Amino acid sequence: MKTAECFFNEAVLIATGAEKDYIKKIFQHELGEINRRVKLYRKVKSKLVLEGKTVIISDDGVATGATMQAAVWAARQEKPSKVIIALPVGPYDTITKLANASDEVLCLRVP
Figure 1: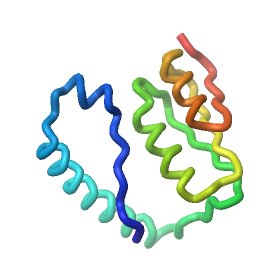
Figure 2: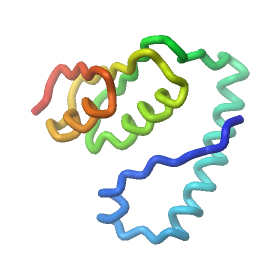
Figure 3: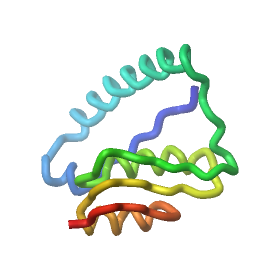
Figure 4: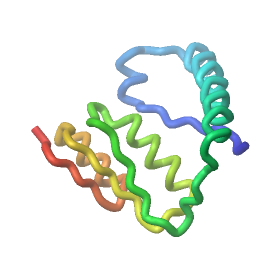
């Protein structure tokens, strides 16, 4: 398994005032949960190779975009030819940020 890396939404960290020790503790806990789930999921379905492929990442909507940003970042590590984000709804500023992180964003409604 690859070494874990972490994506942080800096604005959220600043707004919450979370201390570094707390962040490290939560990171280690969540990393354990991620590893547990990966093992469980891979028993059912093997990992797809993303290199050279068009990847479409979808969610039922975004607010801050942090989770979607992390998904795009993770996909990019595998060198796909294109990353497309598909969403039904999201705020303008978040969609703009995601557009900069991906090759294309399709969002049906941007209130």
